[in-house]
Length: 96
Image (cartoon, rainbow, N blue to C red):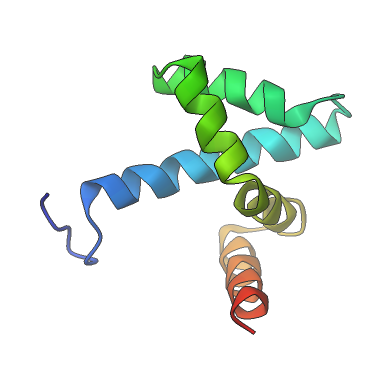
């Protein structure tokens, strides 16, 4: 595995990218009051990331808390900088 400038592998970057996309979709589903938002997110991830539905649902269910936390950050931020601050707050709460 090759390292990027930030010390993350390509796999780690891909994981984070997929996680953020899933959280955005989850936040949108919550706003639209979709009855089963995680199921919709799983379908979307499978479709747009070109992975199997099973692999997508394992990813979604295995990262449910992270997705919910990031969705909270999306809903409570008005800018990219504020989103980053919310994500740091989540990290501080999780570490404490």
